[in-house]
Every structure is written in C-alpha cells, then in structure tokens.
Picture 1 (cartoon, rainbow, N blue to C red):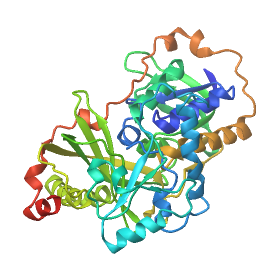
Picture 2: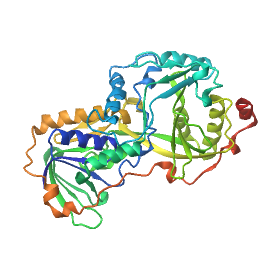
Picture 3: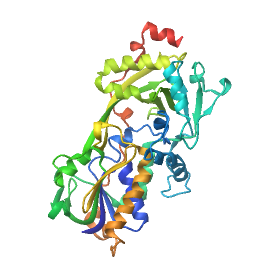
Length: 414
C-alpha cells in the first residue's frame, strides 16, 4: 500500500503532525502501539506556557523564544478560530498564577519572570488573590496562559482523523531497509489481522521514548535519545482549584494544576523541582518532601483531608551535551525518515509545521490517487486506538497526606 507519510506515535506530537500534513493534502497514516497519549502526553500538566521557565533565568535564548507565541496559537485553536479546530477540548483554566515565598531566591525568581515574555505577569493585590494564596508572604501574580485537559485535546484530534489511526502490534512491526537505511516498506499488523505492507515516501517517528526501539529498527544501534525522568506527585480530596507555579530563583519549586477524577474529587498534579528531585526518592521520601514543600509554599492551608500518591514518567528528547533540557523541539533526519521530539506539549504545533516543511522538501506534492484507507476493507475493519486514561485514574498507592506532615510543617500551615 503506497502512502506519502507514515507516522509512528499517537501522542500530541504525532497527532498534530498528522493533522497538519492532511491539511496540506498529503496521504498520511498514524500507527500507535498502545493508547493515544500513553506516556508523556496524558501525564502532562497541560499548561500552555510561553517561556516562563526560561525567563526565570533572566533571558530567553533564540531557540526558546519560539515558545513565546505558543499560548496565542493554542488559544486560537481552542476557540475554533484556527486549524486544527479544538473547540471540543476542555480548557481547565484561562490563566495561571505565579507566586513566591519570602526567600531571597524566590524574590529574584519573580524578577526574572518579567523578562522576555509576550505577556508579563499581572500582580494581584490582596483582595484579588485566590483563597489558597491569601497568606503567601510574597508577590502573587497571574499570567494569561491557558491550562488544557490533555485527554480532551487528544480526543479532539482523534475524532478528526479516526480513519487514519491504526492500532498495531509493535513486536510484529518489520522494516524493510534499502541502502543507507532507506525505509522501503513497513509491515504492520494488529492483534487479529494478517500483516499489511505499507510503502511510505517518508516516515516520521514521534513515539517519545518508543523512538529508541524504532530507531534501532532502522539501523541506529545507539539512538541519539535521552530520558529525563520525573517523579510526579498527585493529591486528591478537599482541595481548591489552583493552577500555577511557585518560583524559587531560576526554578519552579512546585507547579500545580487542578482537575477532577471520575468520582468528582479534585485532583492536583504537582510537578516542578520536586518532581525532578523526586527521581532519587522512594514514595515515603517523596511524600514527606511534598508535605514540607506544600506547607511552605501554601501557608495557612489545611491538608488534613487530602490523599497523596505518585507516578513516574520519562521525558524523551534528543540527546544533548550534559543531558541538558533542550530549549525547543529536536529532530534527527535521514534520507526518508525523521525522528522528532517536541520537548514540551506547547511546542507540538511548531514542530508539526517544521515537519510539514521537511516533508514538502522531500516528497513535493502528494501523488495519492485515492484514499486507500477507504478502499481496502482490511483497513476499514482495523482496530482504532483510543485515548489513554490519566494517571490518577489507575494509580493505587493513595495514602493520607497528614501522615507526612511534621509538627514543623503544621506550624507553617497554621
């Protein structure tokens, strides 16, 4: 079966790339071995930020400056004024809060956050602060950055392209390579059907950490990829709605986003520096660190009726010197395939546009004469991947946060 582009990976990067390529008239299909978004996308906190983390350092690199335009682009798509139309997706919040503690490093961080952003933080007076931030000793501000529900965005993209999405058996996928690791054909199958051979003009790998195995399949014995893990904290129970960052120097000490689970309970995802430091901690150590940090960054708030859990997630990126965080999306290019990593959820549209430009330069215009996905009955009956469940719906290690709050922490919260 001939096609212009095959995409491996049904996270935000692969789905946005599929949307952009089909908008431009290319015949494209996407393969997913698990559920859409499983791994990084579904675990994302959903803040469409415009470079605040980079601005904490007092400046923006030329590459990182690209992210400044992402909040407005996403806002247009989410309002239905731009393609892809994501009006059916859920926006959890239209803004984020930014606050600091009374430490010197936290004060310096708030100064850095004003530099290099399209929209600077707006300081709030005491009467306009949300209740959960009422007793913060430092500055509280708000930023015009939306918080989206990743699962709903994935579902909006899924419904736009369901006929082009295919669930595959990763272990049964075989690449036929020519000279210089050129992909001549790809044989895929689902759990019940016979294998189908595809002949793509170009192939895009957008499978996150799964790119490592895919790259090995096309001759890269040591894939140029790195993993930077996170140990994310989850809270549920009697919690207010809060979305934002507590800054501390050039870092975000905690980043908190809010949603609800199937039972209607409020859920907090807690990331930031605590999630990075937490990769070296077991659950008990992480829970104790979370109790101490939350008591300090949210003084006066009572966490007695709250449960805590955690989960680990790998951020997959192209390998960098010293395993540093890339400033923008990253790619590896060969003759007729591309491996891509968006680095951040917010950068998926920018990366998709660049991928479309690369496809146009390699493939030219589409040569597809018909939509073979509609002609071949085997494809019409193929299993379609569904959207993954968010981590708070399947983690089981919930325990009372109060068990980890020390007398010192209680004095801070009093």
